[in-house]
Image 1 (cartoon, helix red, strand yellow):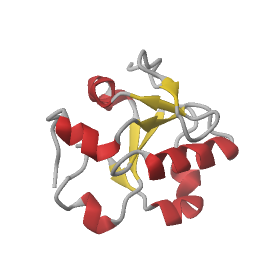
Image 2: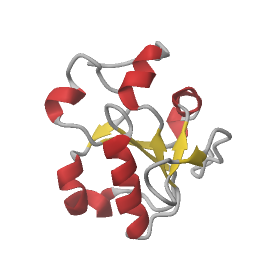
Image 3: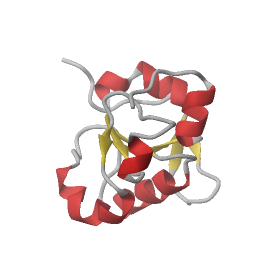
Length: 121
């Protein structure tokens, strides 16, 4: 059975949101099969130029409060956006609502693309 709680080696404090931790895109790619990935951008961004992380699920930031109960509490969840700001906000919100294994993907899809990691459009 695969481990549902990932201990990320690149975990670092987010500079803008106290208590939020960022993880490196390359490490997320290593553990993609073991985590729930939530993209909080708009639908046109998700399918647009930057694409999205394969296997990620779209959950627009504004609708997150309505869908939070769909997220697993017994699995690591990584939030993703364009640059890392909205996903950090989503991570903070999830933490305030009792989620403990939630992370922000550092640099968002901009950094993911810069690192030439695989995307879907």
